[in-house]
Image (cartoon, rainbow, N blue to C red; front, side, top):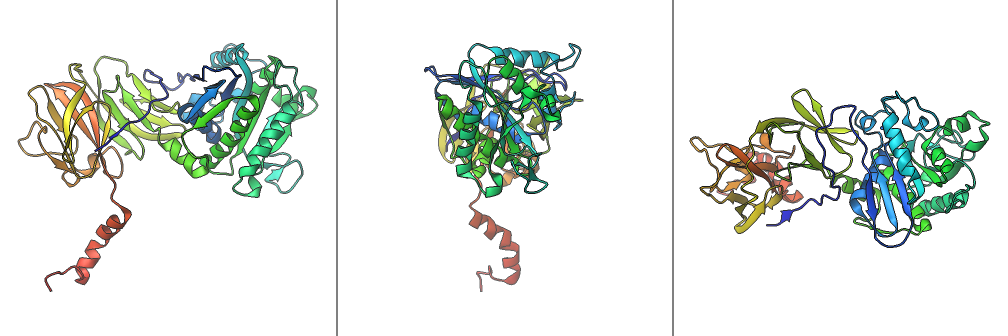
Length: 462
């Protein structure tokens, strides 16, 4: 037996979010060693998941070894969960002038303050744009009017304390990314919008943006665009390629927990779809979660406090339930069961595949064959998905996967089940029992059993 531990690198505790009150978060990855501080921002436009997903991976899967990286992965969180460019208009056009009555006024002022912070040496702003930018016309989707697969600068150089050679730094980042393309069409180019001139409609629009505001504050800033013509994980892959090149140029040292490729990026993103409630009393692994999870124990007469494993995960109230969003995706809906909580227990002894372990609440344990919670006079156990007439306490019962009703599992695959522990009628905590997946060959054999039996191939009595 091994305990599956989810590393909560994103230590964000929140009350239940109501649509319109989703604040962005700032995550400071500081090495404690000399080096510049780079601010990375994603999610200003909610329909650009390649950018904000890459920013989230910086928070959860990177370690900074020299210098610092500050990350805002969810600047316009409401627009992210609505998958909208901007619920209240385009936030990236609100940095030159903004009415204090604008619903996003406070958020814009707050990110401006972060940009102006004396520690911030440069800004990287992440986007996804349609098509593939090319300095020469190739086709409708690959030309000067497109934005995808480009590094955006407002001008060739900037009067800043450091890193004012914008064109040179952008060209270096582009060259590095272009050494790792999946196909030539994905090549990056530098796009200079010549914002300061204000002699084109594009330049006039860019004068209202976050990057141009940053340059006006003496902070070199770069826009990084993935292509909306590519799947989101591949966009995030290219974003990270460009970001890493910039960090190297800036003198920031880093390491990551995964090999950098589009499949690995997709896998890394899915590793963080989890949430815990009330100091880990309740933990839910929501990868491949069912559309609705019912009777989730939550504390009575209390705000719903939760800790997401990713800064892209949020809970939003919906009538009498809670919708869980991971970026643009509504991964599940939780129906709470409010009850009294008991804090006298933090763990229970379990026997898993013949091995005894004391398992803390808020953990998922992997089960190959069977598990049971050891009985005690101090608590009773309710395994969601198991029922036996006349049995009110399921502690002491050895359970295998076939004895649990799959429709009550947390996941769609019927593998992960809730083990809830109570003291009297008060809820103590929850553990997830995750049955191991069958090897593909065994699953294929089981799928073919009916056909084999019908054909007589399994009639061993002949």
